[in-house]
Amino acid sequence: MKFTLTRKHLYWWPVKVAVPHPDKDRAGEQLEMEFRMQFESLPRSEADRLAELMKADPSAHAHADIRLVARDWDGVVDDDGDAVAFTEEALDEFMQISWYRLAVYRAWGASLVGDAARLGN
Image (cartoon, rainbow, N blue to C red; front, side):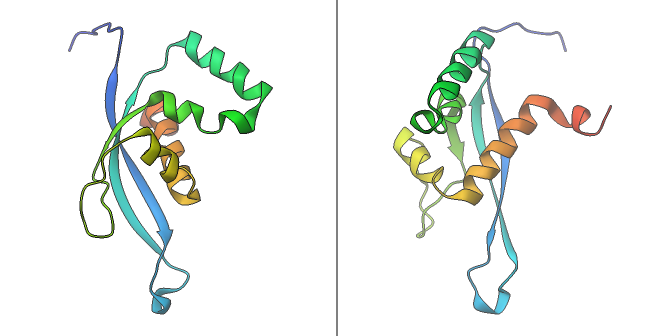
């Protein structure tokens, strides 16, 4: 496949979430779930600008990096099993919960380096 240089690159990546199991008989266990998130690659100039903002006032720009790159999700449902639409408000609410937030950052980081880098190839 030839390399295609695009101005805007959108891609899907799996997000694996491990949350504490809700059943008392399974206390101490993790419940594993997965969904897919669509990310947009971030130009270097935008990444540098964001880094400066975060350095100046980290709390005012919490998760600004994810807000800039997250574009959609698939496989996210509510308690009734209905699909949850991707919105900035839904993402902000989602990112308040530690295990979801960590999973999104882990997935985004993995998407940036790929498995070959992680495996040392």
